[in-house]
Amino acid sequence: MKSKVVPLRIPEHLDELAALSAQEEHTDKATALRQWMHRGAAQYVLKLVSEGRISIGRAAELLNVTVYDLHYQAEMLGIELGASDEQRKRSRTLAAEVAKRPAR
Image (cartoon, rainbow, N blue to C red; front, side, top):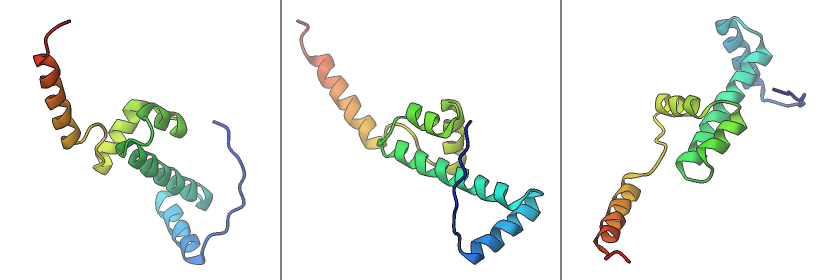
């Protein structure tokens, strides 16, 4: 995975929080900030998938993980991927209507 240096200004309170996180996780502040960014990106992308705005495959590409990893992360975060209850109900209704139609 390629990386890119990006200058970033953050509020002092987040800098202090990153230092605390780094100390707790036995890492450096930059790593703590990257971990936060990755978790936030994962949550954002999973939200887009759950809303049907991007596919699970595209989400996996953007995060450089597998589709299975995304399903696991969604489960851990309580984010539902796939059809909603309403969509499943409409799908069943449509399938029943199609099944009743005479064959051509």
